[in-house]
Length: 324
Ligand code: TXA
Ligand code: MG
Image 1 (cartoon, rainbow, N blue to C red):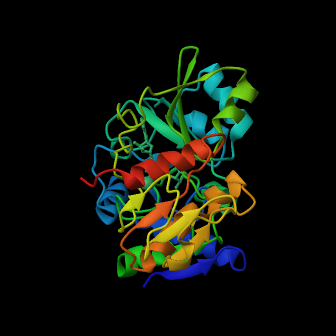
Image 2 (image 1 turned 90 degrees about the vertical axis):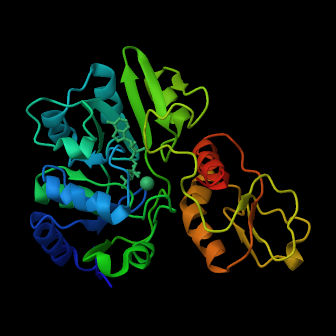
């Protein structure tokens, strides 16, 4: 089993151990405000190869490179004025920007899957301290085996990887609970490549521009990770349920009971008060709890499509998609 070091009580030890492992080219699981990441030196091809191998991730699917701040990001990529304004408004935070790589950047092409762009994010909390100390960008996909639910606690990560992982830094439950929102600026247009932990209406309010969504989520795989069956629990998922079948797990929203709850295997409420940020933070952990019951299926009651509901519903649709 991986060593788990608590960043809240043992910050100095966590920094030292993580930097030591990263310098050896060994991936380390780190907390971020969105989900836990499996981090490796983005300039080290062997370390990046280890990430792909540990996750079982297709190599055509590029990784997000994490930076300590915008200044570090600008050393590696070219920021047009609108991308820079987005970075200044929302970093550190749950936003990834796709920007052109600088030819002189030491970020290895393997981390970018050979693309001439790079996905960059400045995370909040302990991860930014680690990045500042380590001094190089960290490539970090979510710290889960490919196709599985992203981890929102150190325990999820340790359980998924077992002996295959050396070190997990524990920063407590992820505050946002959904992966970052991915944007790409094209001229005057801001394109949404993945809805996530940063609410699109907030981006529109701050920039005064409409964010352009893909016609059909997952249809054009511009962010190649957006494969339909992603974020899948083991049990089949039933969406927009208005009742619960005997033996099913119900994951509902907003506090109202559904018919059939008495015969359910388990009933969880993402946010009894109807708060979408709370629902986002609980979503992946509740899916894992639902799976742990061994129930034959998981029913979800409808979730509003407003605000963070867009990203929550995106993940639910992927969880319910036919398995490849
Ligand atoms: O919140 C997050 O974004 C988390 C934490 C750990 O930061 N990371 C995460 O990484 O969700 P991952 O690898 O699971 O998702 C990365 C997504 C993929 O869909 C990938 O295709 C897209 O980012 N991506 C990365 N670089 C890209 C690029 N140059 N062009 C288009 N899409 C890119
Ligand atoms: Mg992922």
